[in-house]
Amino acid sequence: MLRLVRIMVRLVFVVGLIGLAACSPAQPAQPTADPAMIYTQAAQTVQAQLAQTQAAMPTATPTLVPSETPIPSPTLPPTEVPSPTEMATLPPLPTQPVLQPSVTQPVQQVGDHATFLYNVPGDGSTFDRGQKFLLAIGFQNSGTTTWTKQYRLVFMGGAQMSGVTVIYLEKEVKPGQKYEFDIAQAAPDKVGSYISRWKFVNASGVYIAEMYIKFSVK
Image: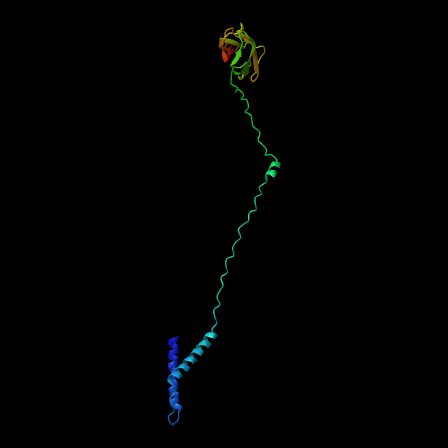
């Protein structure tokens, strides 16, 4: 831009000199104008024209970039913690019922089968010497045949606590039914530990189940 100004100033200066030479009559020589002043005036003229040109040109309007609006974070509702007084008045939580294990039923088998259930008194009982008691022995018919009155409980060995060695059923027992043998017994007269064994047989004398009782005499 400065170079262009200088060139234009020089052109104006030269043209002015030529014009002065052509138009001036033959008169006595006038004092020569100061070249520096002419150069300054020309430069001021060019600068004024450039300023007018720049003022006429439209100025670029800066495009504003919208700022990012911060997204508000979700506000969680405050968790209310009950006071000790409120906790004391709250109803108790429901408790689940404790399920007790059910008694396993004997599996039914084809033919003659008996499942031992219990003996009373139980194993580990203690008796006085010669003490009399009733021994109860329970069985369940876990087969597919009906027990007749020929089915029986037979003493196998160990402590024989009475003269009874064979006890027959007093009634028929169908599959799934239970039966209890009751035997009058008397504890031995000698102190010590004992065991008495019994077996259950069918009408043909075939063994189908057995039981024993352990006890002591003091």
